[in-house]
Image 1 (spheres, one colour):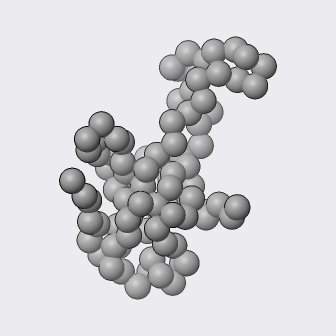
Image 2: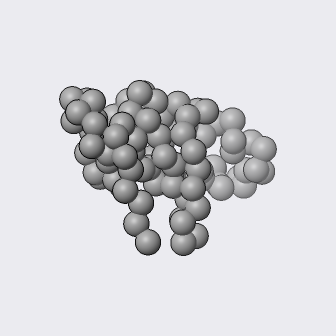
Length: 93
């Protein structure tokens, strides 16, 4: 099953937060939530010109607003449907 966003929306595949710190300590669920940046990979883009103007394309890594979008679980994978205006930054590799 595929998701094809419309207009100004993007489909993002979220990154699961690290369960263990660099020093080897395991984090409880409550600790992970506050410290996790909202980073994701773009897996599909809509047809809006705003997306192309911002230089966003499939495969890019982005940071999006904390309360943005709608979470969707498709075939056991979590995705976010987010408007292009909720993208805060593009991560350069």
